[in-house]
Image 1 (spheres, rainbow, N blue to C red):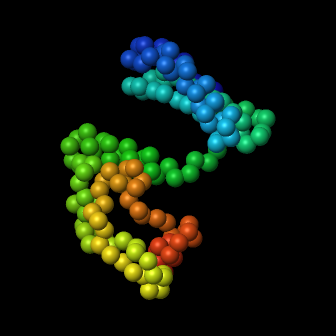
Image 2: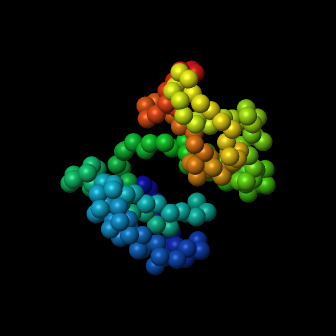
Length: 161
């Protein structure tokens, strides 16, 4: 375990009873249903840890329980870090979720969307509306990755590099 004593949740304005039910909720809805093999949960406020719990095994169907010392790969961690940065900018009134992305990244002003064809001869059209900051935060922007190999848009990304 880490070298810390948990803070009484009430001392940092959190409800201890509600925090206490969270591990069982995640176990029932995620671990027991086979969606994930384990769940580490840490809730802090003001730099004080109010709740910390670990449930599940290091792999699906495994018997070795996870703990604070368990090392595991966390995919796509740029998303929460970027979203946190956007939330900080939002708090400082430097960005708005309903603004078009092109306001901050002008290269997106004339973005086109896939409307059929092939990677070699794509049919493109103007989008129904501009992509917003909210679209980026909620992962509904329509942007994809070239490495997914799912469709022609992925292939176009690879061709254009």
